[in-house]
Length: 208
Image 1 (cartoon, rainbow, N blue to C red):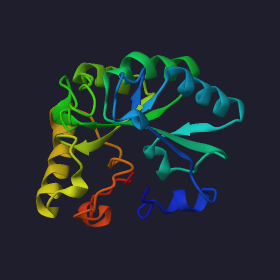
Image 2: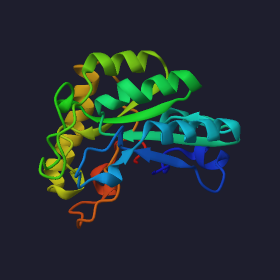
Image 3: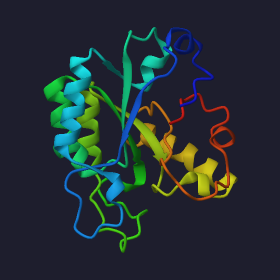
């Protein structure tokens, strides 16, 4: 998380800001090669309950420009999978929890074609209508992963920057949604072709 452009957040934060990052919520397919990307609904719900009991406040990137509550935590989900709408969103409503969802806007209503199908069956991606419904609930903020979901940091710097800018434009112009942050896939083992700082220069959004 880059807070260079958020001095008020820096002043009011504790030594660190807890950020919980999830990808796929549900039952992992048999013989999946991507088991580490899955979390069961039961495990997620236990975490939400535990954080609520301990007095944590669920914030989103838009709150980084304000004075933060005493025990802030950021809940983030990468990919925009259908399970976010069918499983996670009901839990957010049940426990009055706010979360940030990072999507690749050109994949809405399709599937995660950025993933190799031999590693695991493709998963459906939520639709634009579902995304708007969740944003209107005030419980979900939207961040961008780019257009296609492919790792921007492994691309040519010029093309990655063009894709990032276009993804922000399309979320705003096509879906009337203002992205609150820029997200990058966690845990990549590949050598990066471009740094997050270089790629996001002069884009005044926090980086995850």
